Image (cartoon, rainbow, N blue to C red; front, top):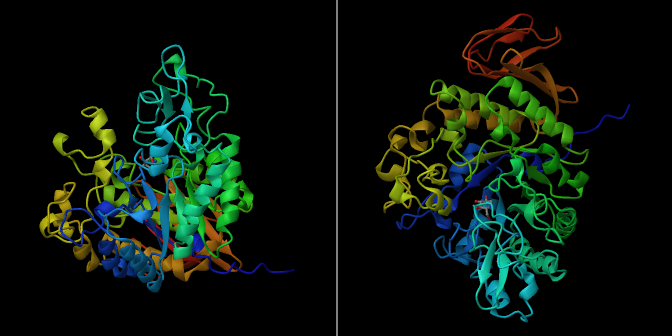
Length: 535
Ligand code: NOJ
């Protein structure tokens, strides 16, 4: 029998990635907005936490109509965040700390201030006209019924040429025309610029939206209601996958780089669609499917979600997992009911860090940062500005990182661009750091355990208890190494029974001593217990 050896350690598969929203991480110059030097000064913190990679939300030049998701030059750094020298320094210093850097690349659209768009809009006959999606109107209105993801028609009328341009998001974010054969090469050059600088990969913004229907057919309405559109002709067109595969080929010319795609589906959390972009190892390396985010709390729900996700991952694909990001509410505030939030955060973190797939941690999640109430007049997110008072937008999960109990949570000496949560008095990195029982210590310990045990990084995921009684238990198996994880999602004691051969030493437990050895027959599990055993 030939024993399959563990794979060599691959940072993006076996490591842990931390998502930084740069405006809110750390402000080094007192202007109230986070910046690149701020991130550099916190690399020690990230290394200590055990992070192997950073996904950095966009820092490219941008008029900030959507806080960086509207780029006007992919090869420049927005002065809000610093300079190109700062960026070079970040790449270098992060690497010195053993941390890779994933940049956020927005291929679907640019800013309407990008020189490409300005040229494209300048005349119907401009050579860049077809870099974007321009159409004549129909019957005195827009070309078809396509709706923008942020409300209203996705078509904006341009007085100069008398045509409409398409925007999946705000009108300041015109969509590029990926059906134009020029486009892929144009964009590969932008990516190459960063790969040559040493960027370790890209998070690809809404990558499943990049190609639209060739015939511009109307999207069907959900329930016949004009507000709810099924994005049949504006998402997941076959050609997007072809482009992704081409992109992968280009990126693979560089060693050890990664592509992780945001696959946004409606309804969200469609594992099958997300996994299809992995193209059995030929597409993006990983895809966010968001299924854990959109499942309600419960062992059985989470079990089903993980099972579905893995079932869809092709043989040569690799999962990644995430609890939240800059577009969603803070994970801890999504877990239901006011009580036991922190216990639930621990169960969820343990799950994220011990199931198969690369964990992505959203900044502040490791100290249990909550949604922050942002007053009506302080809203900065353009979505919130558009829909207040009915929806206040995404600011509540983008507030400054809470570093200490001092003024503005130690984030800035100036006036923070968004309010700092008042709970920073007690919920902050400095206080958590010295406290062995804190959530931060919990994260740090679990990441260390994950690092020390290849089975947790590479092993198969074998469910043992599938959540029916509120308990989820599974093994991670790599050759002789067998780790068993037991998670009680409930506030009640639970009796569980695992197969007789399951026993082992405690690697970590919220309730048990390290010296204990456990036999799993008729074991009583404590409320919200997290226990990890090595068999
Ligand atoms: C997804 C990004 O995560 C979000 O923040 C942004 O508004 C849209 N894409 C448009 O780029």
